[in-house]
Image (cartoon, rainbow, N blue to C red; front, side):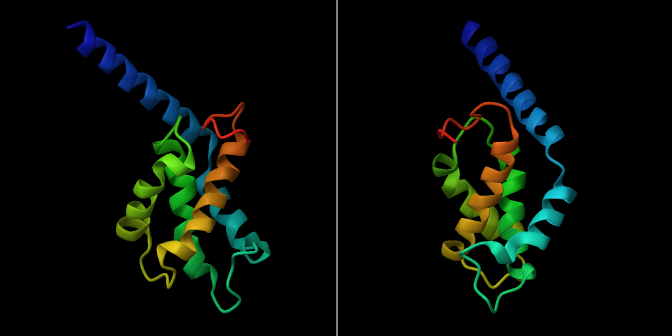
Amino acid sequence: VGTAVGAAVGAVAGGLAGKGVAERMDPTAENQYWEQNYRNESYVKPDYTYQDYGPAYRTGYEARARYEGRNFDEVEPELRRDYETRYRGDSRLEWQDAREATRAAWHRVERALPGDADRDGR
């Protein structure tokens, strides 16, 4: 019984932590930021548009709340799956090219949070 209660409390606490990130992260503002600034990133291919990169950014900034307390490298397999099955749409980017955009969006949200929420030293 104690284990079940502990697991339930942990799940609720984790959910509340993720809710806190979601409340501090405005997806509309993140989308606008990346749409205005994506061309400044070194990984961007000159012949690709925001329509290609937008889904990768969205994967990163929305996932940051879902995977609260974990770092990018820990959740990369889930992020890849999310990108390929939920977000990619008509983007021409394969995961190996979308990965850096996803990472950039993840870290932009993480840097806006107090402390080192994903324990990556940044």
